[in-house]
Length: 542
Ligand code: G16
Image (tube, rainbow, N blue to C red):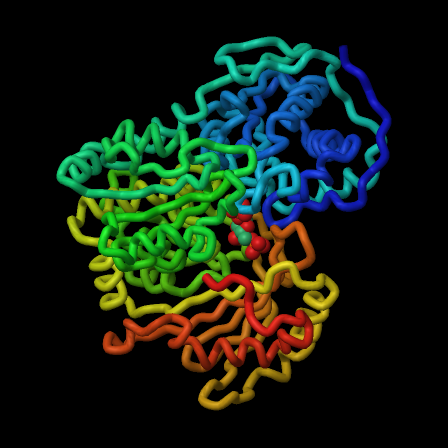
């Protein structure tokens, strides 16, 4: 039976960089999930009888939210819901399923790399028919709806058993519980030379993949150890846990330091890799060599043709604005276009749909391609594996060869996490006002060539996105970028991105923080970071 239940709006349901992310207790408020999900459906047209894919990264509240979503989807007229067994689907697997089932869309339940558990974070994101995150005009419509919603529709029924394969009826909607991995693994087989990678493992290639007790465990066990024959035990923390075992499932040098330490030790395997809570981010560390996400994007773009799925070459490359310019040099050499977009995977969707780009990436540990419309952690690991198997060289040798060919972009991101929100916004406003005066100024040997607030014009749908990050660009090509994170759930996080290009091979092997020391000091001075954030140093450096 369908019931219409009266509700009152919440004022804080504006989706951020990637969907609505809040602390679990916020989502547990009365009708909080119901309001947001009904607002999603109220903002969409034409889904009667259509298919909705639903799944999440298994974090705390995943199972409860799935039941609510299914009941609201049924009441609103969806014809079929496809759910990963146990409610488990990685973000790229949702994207792949939406595409292969020709679904109307999907709901992804995750707060990505943010910690989980009863006091951790939760998130709800809507993906559209191309498999990608809803574009800004849709997320904005959802937000507007959340401010005026007065009721939601829900089916009154017992919970669906999401732990048993098969189909059941929920009101007029059919609910199918499917294998979380199968469809995704089949897609990976079409892109990579599994025989070649299997041969490499058979010949002694060793790796560790840390699933961080998050969603990629089942995928990594099935693909790396199962299909590709990596030694048992190659996958660490392979069971998804509601609280990620108390860890922070962010595959960076702080939260995956143990992997870094292993990769730098005498016992290092050939490749160490990790993914995040929902499986869209990646970390790549070869024996003795950490690969920055920006370099990884450039190296993958330069070598993608070695993998069967990209044999005929790539159409173009896209990167978010704060991502280093390393990929630009590869695109130039390949003679393909390079697009610079705002932060947020949703900005790549149009470029991929229009066939303008094949590979996309971001400094925030995300890389992906036109196979889905999300970034894809395991995909990046598999492409690295395929390239390593094809080139029969180490990660370190490939990185060095890349720098020798293209030059090196020294790159680092400094995060000032959970600072006072008013202070952070005041910092950005003050700096924005100062940008015109910065142009032409010199700070020691550093001469400011341009200073602006990044704006993006989407070449496909003609939309404009303003205020996407403050850029201070120097005459030698160095750059400092400032923006506030759109994914945090407490206070504000200031991100400062620092970059310098080094063409001279003799100077390409310095330590990153040292190579950027003058820019780092200047980044704090220009923006008066300590005054506005009360922090002398960043909380995370990647
Ligand atoms: C999301 C977005 C990415 C973005 C990242 C960081 O990733 O999909 O496009 O780069 O957040 O965004 P921000 O700098 O605003 O915090 P994920 O992995 O959290 O879904």
